[in-house]
Image (cartoon, rainbow, N blue to C red; front, side, top):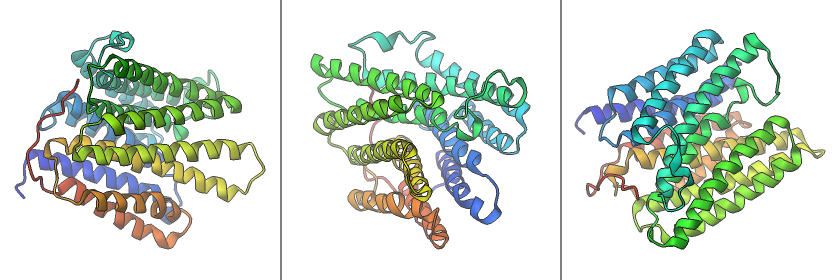
Length: 370
């Protein structure tokens, strides 16, 4: 394998994703809270980099994208070390970098969101960038509010639980890829359905986020159930109209993970309001987190990073089954059975390495956006 700049950035991303996974278990050995590093290195560093890489549409990342990658790592460690003033400042710098991509690629005002006949893939892509900008600015405000201003307090709006803010942009960019390979793009019925699904996902998640902050239980159950059925509808459309290609099989697997994420999320919301064994709640919450990060989000990021190399030389079905075994079962239960931590880390690294560094059988074209 020839060492190129493209290989170097792939190794760097592989390292960040591996480090994020390892930090998820490191508290067992060092008795420290590594949650910020675990989430930020995966969702912000790896996920944000992937979003900008796709936005550029180049074979290798630009200097500005690499700069985002490096600065986001610094931000993650500053937040971990509770150096809040520099962390808040860096969050704003990262937001400005992402905003520069958004303005160049799309426009300041997201007029495309309101056009029924516009590509759903482009809508989700623009929404991903916009959401990442807002998440970074909001994280800066949350840091300053919690540490210095104290203007208001919401139990669910703190840096330690700032999960949805950086996870959602990655979900949106994966949706962009999914809708980008749906055929029959001239069918007005399909375009209308895609437009409705776009608004259902985005408005639904925003409302759900508000309900979480307000701790409004009926609203959380209703919106999470609504989002689950929206995902089912997206799955049906994608399964029927998605182009027959290797990427589709991995993305179908990703949607299965997303549905599992939704089910465990609904179960956890309901359990919180009932008399239940706390251990069961923790198990379901961990399953929910792993399915979201290392099932749904990870698959989307890997497909984007390797898009130009598809079809890649691995057995698709075996790779998917292996991924399910590691993330559905081994990884979440390793949180409660320490003897499984090392096997879980090793299995994850093996899967990531095989997917990232497998060769390609035929060189395919760039991602085609409708």
